[in-house]
Length: 102
Image (tube, helix red, strand yellow):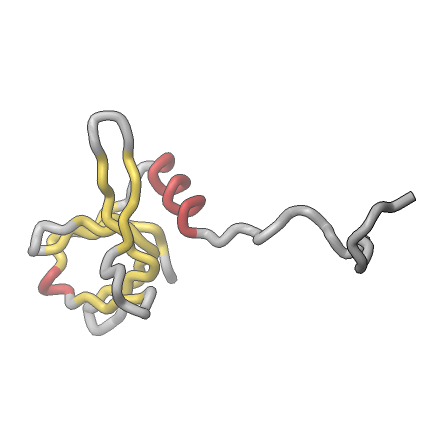
């Protein structure tokens, strides 16, 4: 089962993502991001941005700890990584030809 967790790696990186732990001891993290912040703002950067995969297996020997994020961070992550509808405007009743409707 996947849960949103923070993972701290032995390299010092901190990842936030949808995590599941396998019986073999590896962690699978899907849609992982790193948290970046400055004095006023916080945001996410994709982990491995040039990879065509959105899921990564990490050996348990590379994980220092796994922790649950705060509720607000979890909600922010879910909202930022969940695809939104492309358009909320229903155009199915629109006329098929351009022009002035009288």
